[in-house]
Image (tube, rainbow, N blue to C red; front, side):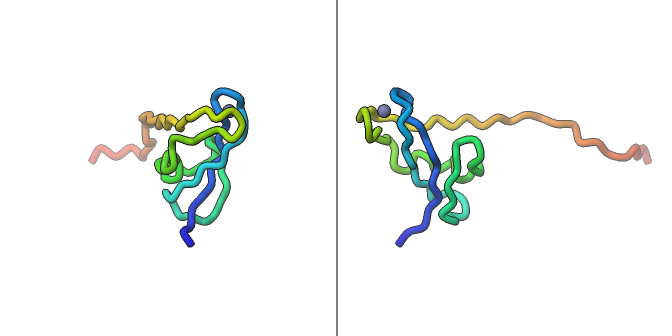
Length: 80
Ligand SMILES: [Zn+2]
């Protein structure tokens, strides 16, 4: 019995819900959406891709784009 997390996806054609399984991350049998899933869970989102929509039979996969940006770290003045 494998463990996994679930991610709720929606068919890009008809918007039917699809539950994808991911073995990335801690596998706590949590159910996430694509907006609250940890990045390691999203990293394995296409484990069973292509997904086939239950309703319209369209095959689809998830495209994950990480948003990386630089942030200045504030630190104390120290010119010694
Ligand atoms: Zn569909």
